[in-house]
Each structure stands twice: as C-alpha cells, then as structure tokens.
Image (cartoon, rainbow, N blue to C red; front, top):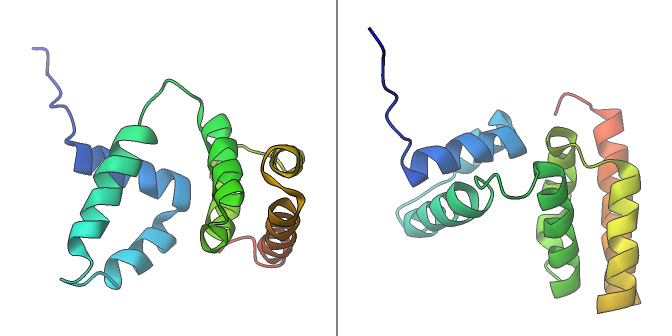
Length: 134
C-alpha cells in the first residue's frame, strides 16, 4: 500500500529550512525569546523569509546565502551579517565566496559598507574557528 505525504505548511517548511540554515541551537534560542509582542513578526519571517524565499529550490542554498550577505551589506543591515556568516557553514558558501560577495558590494553599493561587512565576517569566521560546534 502506497503512502501519500502531506505537504508541509509554509510555517512548517519555514521552520525546517530555518533550522537547516541557522542550526537548531540558534532557532531554539530565538524561539525561547519569543513573546506575544513579537509573535506575529516571528511568524512573518518564518513563513515569508524561510518558508517561501529560503524554501524555494530555484536557487541553491550556497548562492542564496551569498545573495543574502550581499543585500544585508549593501543595505547596511549589519546586525544580521554575523548570523548569516555562521549559516555559511550549512549553506556551503566558502570564505572565498564571502570575500567575493563583499568585493561586489564595494563596487555596487560602496566601499564603507563592504569594509564594515568584511570586518564583521572576519570576526565571525575567527569565532567559528575558535568554537566550531557553536
């Protein structure tokens, strides 16, 4: 007898992708800090960012990771860069890929933003090497 699988909801798919990209420890910490105040926002990013954009198989995770880093740096959203640098350990984007991303940012969005993103990336990569299991 054949079994049929039930498609995941966008929230379920989003949580699965979020855990695959960011790691269980990060997602568990974020969920533990979730309150009624930010619940709707957490639902929005889980379903929209993770359950739609990141769950799409149209772009490989390595490239999606690189695009995300470039956009974060280009827009000056520096607080999110360390998290997405850590995610490269799971997405397959290499240190060389990260350096190339910020070269693009320098040319197309500005040297100061790329310079700051590189500083954050170097710091985060060093932390990852010092504590590889985190």
